[in-house]
Length: 326
Ligand SMILES: Cc1ncc(C[n+]2csc(CCOP(=O)(O)OP(=O)(O)O)c2C)c(N)n1
Ligand code: SF4
Ligand SMILES: [Mg+2]
Image (cartoon, rainbow, N blue to C red; front, side, top):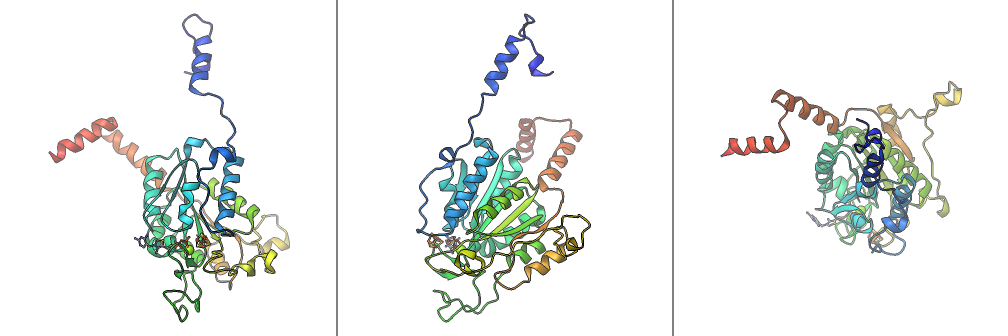
């Protein structure tokens, strides 16, 4: 029955209006003040400030229900992110943010799960989890602040540090081939893969919105400068520092000759080719595809299984499980 047509017994419909008012109080617009928690503790000039500002702007713009926002992270400077967002959240174990976010996303599909972290957290200690979150297509938005270094632990070589980078773990210069985040994510099976730069707030917000609107495992790699341990490394892609920020031109499907040259975001091989361009590369959406999420597949499977056994309640299922292990 439609709640707005339900009466209170006297035919006036007043009861319905009152109960609707009680169950859904008018919402105030989500403001930056409401979303802001602690004052960020990053070094002055750290790229992560701009990421936080972009996230606040995105939340304000989309006016999400405050209690539905969850920010999660592993460990690292970038992973301090949840402290600064006034919402549900957790600063978890180094590299284990994807499994934590996966559990929350699967158990509470009504929540908006945002994951933040660094290149070390995402591509080294958590690299294996990243692949599995991607292949399972678990619904979340993962924003990786890539500074090509371990910032929090004061300058060790990270999986994205370029060859020759001198750090505490490679005093004579890094010798190992770095991870290519876009290639790793394409091969892993992520269904939305994009790249941005912390010096370009408008671009960051645009990508956060697109990643958020995507159903599935969406990842944004953001070049975010560690001014303390790897300064100026992203200047080649920063027009304010003499570099050039080259944006991927996506196909408009308008049958024009110039469209032939534009990028088809559903073309995996074309995305891989873009990912092969030399540093600083290009920015925007590399790849996007529609594939059922684990959330939807698991929901279907649970419903079907429940139906087969006579639709027991959660409590009854739990009791049966306990009975079996007695
Ligand atoms: C299990 C475990 N291993 C190692 C560490 C030490 N540790 C903390 S943060 C970090 C790397 C941080 O680098 P990154 O993820 O790139 O984040 P950033 O600080 O650069 O933002 C390491 C190795 C830890 N806290 N826990
Ligand atoms: S050490 Fe680097 S990454 Fe960490 S807060 Fe300072 S500038 Fe940012
Ligand atoms: Mg880092």
